[in-house]
Length: 547
Picture 1 (cartoon, rainbow, N blue to C red):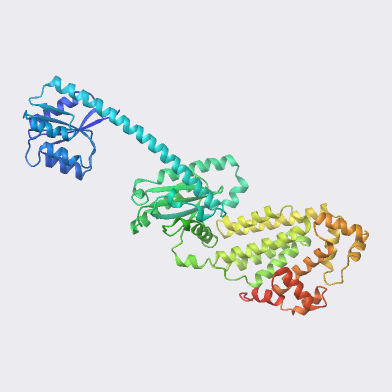
Picture 2: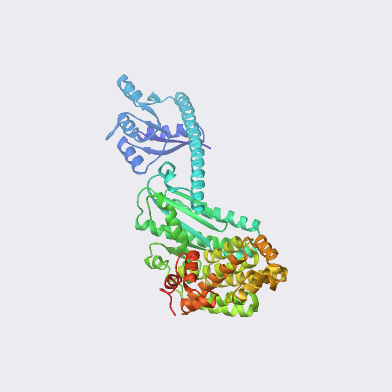
């Protein structure tokens, strides 16, 4: 029921009580929320407590502040209807009251029936005004909702794809000017969840998390962060953008910490998952959004070292410093190559044992960037070998899976489990491909890898697979997309990279080991392929190595 909030002001207590009784007798929608003995008392109470009301019924002549002065001062900041109840039949009072928007002027003593009739008319005007205000409010809310939906769509597109031209986005046209904070929430159990959970279950959890976001943006945090936007980052992570008109105070930072903690605790209580959060610094220019996004994605990887279910702040200089890559150690290169060697001819246990040594090196690191770079090196080298067997069919999917391991691992144990599972999966795939493709091209590739240091000719390879050189050359090009000699050169130069990274052999010795008697020719070929001479390549890949 819509209530009509009424305030009564008269210096005679008997008349105030009589008016109050008559107002309340007009129906249960009427409500008297204040009764005062003079205009000054009423004005101070209304303004200091920010009282909202619909109707003011006041006498004219009162001590301290009369009724007309009260109406005039309240009209400066309030919107309301007013009625004058006066014992003075003075046309000048009536004129003044009309100028201030008074809806009626009633003389004392008040006739009960007349007063009820006047209140009925006032009620109609108030209800009409309330209806119009509600209709405008509905229009405004629908427009605001549409605007917010458009804003979230833009934020989602910008954070999902780096290809959107930042200078082309009119940020000020879409968002208010002020201070912003970006927050990244990442689910800690990404690797285990994706294996066990069906789509419907995750959508149920997503609905729960959505309700948590909407419920917890309460009035207290709204004192500082008046607007908020949240959206999904892929399937298992979320972004939150908070806005305040001016820079937030220290108290606001405490509220923000409590706000994120509430979200984390409620998600952990209502779902079987936990989340970690990365909180960015305050910024005013929304063109910085992408840069801060990248920093937070890196920052949340601290959970690989420190464990999940934590909050990380970009303002923590220690965390920021640890994002800088420190160079891959030579022992990492060694273990990577040994792991790849076991992928084809050794048992799973051999591969797992070398992975444990690889993980041991990573576990001693204090930089997520170093761990990520090392895992990416292993992944890329394994995919290179995979492509030798399978051309270009699955390399993009495999690489995406490998990159997700470091991006979404909730702790170091999850990282190890993810890498181990991925390596053994690819190892099994290579074995399956070798078994399925024991044809002449695969046998030729295996022969080439075993004879990289020999003088290799197309005839030698063709003889090994019992084909004529011409037919073999055409078949090899048709199945692999490259010529036989191009493939031989690629294999030799890839091997040269490994030897330059992992050994102290002279460039001339490496050249001869790979079948190039002319070191200058080898160096020229390597530079054409890699963009650097062998000596430059070795220097770049050993300057930060720790033996």
